[in-house]
Image (cartoon, rainbow, N blue to C red; front, side, top):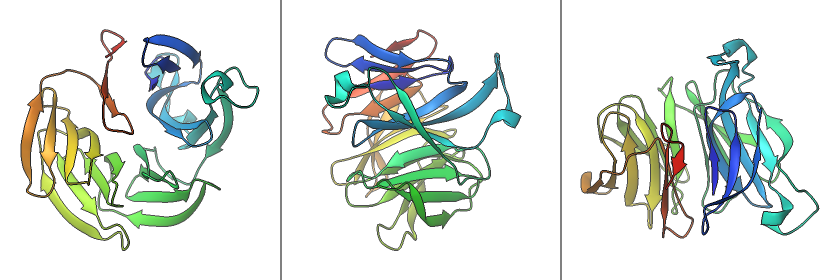
Length: 239
């Protein structure tokens, strides 16, 4: 399990024991999102800070590519996080990132656009134009659908091949903070800023299946769909 926060730290955890394995500090930015990739790597993005204040002038609108410790990925001789590269391409702050289910594509959202990269080279091979200045969340489904959400609480679904917008629906109050497709893409876990807890959403019939009151500022679900982790900023805990 990998977590990041406003203290500029990225921490790698043993999910079974809750033990901290290692961390990287002083990266200079709020790690808004950290996602694992194949080959023992991870990507992150965030808002750059000078002291305790955001510093837009220092933001290079880039995604960071990290190498995870060898003790976790069981190969090589690295013992800590290593910064491998910075991935540019956006002309404004990165708002969200996602990785396709097969691990081959990396999606990143900026102002009015979503860049699609080949994970083997990290070259941009497609740009999706959107009418959103702020796409707050991205998620890639098992069937190839791409899900996006913004500050208006609207969830959008994009076609797997054409990447044309398939449908859109209002799912909650305030902007969407988190979403994750489950199973065959017809069900999603969704978190809205101004709504307590999170919901399980029926994307096919556009209705709420279940509500959970678990608080948290960040959520993630395991690749096998069997467990969910919630991070709470005020208490500094991950459950």
